[in-house]
Structure formats: C-alpha cells, structure tokens
Length: 349
Image (cartoon, rainbow, N blue to C red):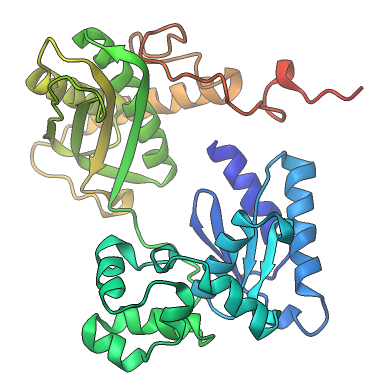
C-alpha cells in the first residue's frame, strides 16, 4: 500500500513544478495549478492525471479543482458523488448558477475542518448546506466560532487562506490496527495479531527515521453486538527512545498481558507508537547500552534487507503472518496487486 501510494504521488508530481505539490495523506494531495490556467484547460489537464493513474497504476481517483484548498476539497466530494463529472469537478471555472445548485445540495458537515460539533452549531444557526456557509458573514462566523472557521468561509468564497505546505508536520503518533475477520477469544491469537501490527507500525516509523518511547495497545469487542462490551487501552513506557522491533514488541506483549480478559469476543486490536522524535534528536543517558543498540540496529537492517529482496512476509517475529489465522481480515473484496504480484497480473482477452 505504501509503495503504491508513493508511486501515485510521484506520478502526480510529474505534472507540476517542485514546490507545487503537498502530500496531505497516504492517498490525497494538493497541487497548485494557478500558473497552468493560462495555457491549459485545467479540467482536461487533471483528467489526464486520472487516466494515467488508472492506466499505469490501476488506481481509480477523483479530483476537485477550486480557488482554494477548502473549495477544492468540496469539489472533490462532488466529483465522487456525481458520475456526470467523470471524476473531475472544477468549481473554479463553473458558472455561478450551476455551482450554487450543487453546493446547496451538499451538507455543511462535509466541509473540510467543520467537524461534528461545529456542524450541529451551524445547523442551529440555520446554516445547513455548503451554500449557506458560503453566504454567511465571515466576521460573524469568527465571533461564534474561531478564526479557523472564518478562514474556512473565506476559502469557500474563493479567497485562498491556507498555503501549500511542502514539509508535512512531524507525526505525533503512528497507529496500526485492523478489525478481525472473525471474533477472537484466545490471548495468544490476539498477541499474534498485535505482533504484526507492531511490525507494520515500526516499518513506518523507521521509514520516517523516528524513534518512540511509548507504545499504546488496545483491544475491542464488537460495537454492535449485544454481548458485554470491553475496550481497554494501555500505554507501556520503554527505557529510552527506540525503533527496535523486538523491544517495542515486548512492550506491546506486556500491555496485552495486563488488559486481556478471557470470555470476550474481541473484534479489533491495534497499537499506537507515541512520543515520537527524529533519530537526530535522540540524547543517550548514562544507562544507554551502545553495543546493544548497535547490534539491534544491524539486526533490523538485516531483516529489512531480507524483506526487500524476498517480500515482507518472509521474516517475522513469532507467528504473526499466518494467513489462515482466525484474526486475519476477510479479503474477498481486496483489489488485485496488478503491479506487485506475478499471479495477479492483469489479463486481457
């Protein structure tokens, strides 16, 4: 997934100059198109992006064009909901009457950054659609909410208030979790799944060249079953900042031992890597074992080299990659891996 996301972002980045793309999340980015409007039909330009993503990567996507980031997000929402736009909605160049008709049909809760509580408050002010919010007074909105909401209104009115960010802010946490394919009862099965979640989380953390000092662990029963519910969460502290998979896994197992209770139907588990810092900011103390850290780093690098050559599932801690395990996700609807698995190559004819 991460590899495909990187390829997707690199492909989109080829359409603009350096400094004109902000990677917002694993599957979403903002692109500055202002300088291209003079020489290109923007709708056709980004439609070409969509076609390339589909043809080269097998990834369907929708694109919204706006005069601001917030307007572009709403345009993207409209593109997803209306097949008429064929995946691209350009609010920046749409005639006002058509735009108003579309925006009047979109709930204000769909606006980027509004949130559930603000949505309720806006509804009480008789602001129920995106068009209602656009037609509101930004200064009055600021009095009732905050300067952030005022900027949201101005952005929807076509005034760009939020710039493209080239450097994403440092992550505050890394979460790795999944819902189980079937209810899980046994602690060993839960531990097996959590080992995999720790492995995936540490991979992401090492890619970011970060270290953590805390690991949170949670298990949950089903939200919608009629049985007694139990959703504990515990944070385990390690001796010092680390990216050592074995040490973090040991801490997570300790957490499971403390929160697990028999007799429940567990439907989900996960881990959260907390208190992240960049490797360059690590300050050793008097008790730091340099030899131990060096040996563990060499072990981590060896495991990464094996995974890079033979696949990520060829080496693991304990039993955590058992595809037949009861906790494994139901993947009957998983998209084929056209570009990374020989047995799933796209076939024609």
